[in-house]
Image (tube, rainbow, N blue to C red; front, side, top):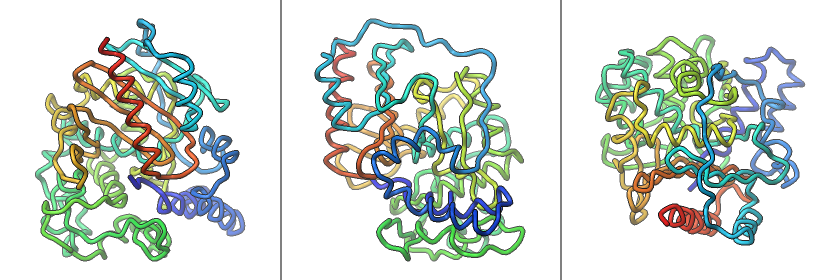
Length: 383
């Protein structure tokens, strides 16, 4: 699936001047780098995916002092040859399998290691969704049935009139959107390129001009811009930066091992549709949090509702929940371009996290091969 591409790259580039006060020359240089993210060489991907904070500005998601233990479990019965072949063919940098919260497999490659962090691309969308649940539990948001315009009043009179938070979460707003990354005139390419009047949020400024295409709730269309709107909504409701709120609600209480890094947009706000840098074990912990239901973080039924199919995406056996993908056999997960993956199987209480630097941003055969091997890993945990 196409997840986060040119819009994110352009966001990373255009944010520099506003967020860091750099010169026009520096900003133009970053814009060039951002526009080339999709076209980095393999050597550049390997070098930059674990170190995005060295290139782009962002905020730190602070970890707490107590780390949630991931004890060793029984080694998974997969041959080294088969694992090595999969890791090499998929350009994987990190692969971890948890079952019952214990590590049954953990492998690193491409110069990556346990102490490092790797970019999430659109895996971040599922983290942003979790913050909506946290904001509901904390009383900042009443429910997902509330209108988006309650929290982002600038959208009144736009295509988002009558759209609920749930319809943003499931990408069924009915607002017209073009996520074609090969089209320079697409919404995903243009959303952070336009000049924004002083004091206006760049995401809101762009999204409020989009026309209505279908009735809310009637059609699923993948829209990175709407996840960015969700981030704005959570920031407005909580009056906190997303990085701070993620630290407060997840990173510290759940015991994440390392600080995370979240890139920011031209207004200095976190790009909520992408752009987290997280360690492999902490990606796995996020999957474990969802598997366990997020007690104390989100309402009791939040993850059960978030990870069931609310929208038909046109692929047999698959669907879309509240910024989580759903799969056959009751599985769910998060995914981003270049192979980033969290996949969860509630039946076997298994979480798999993958960090990668695939040679293409999105490729059907690559995705099918990845899923086939993840299915083998899930089957191995059941033995």
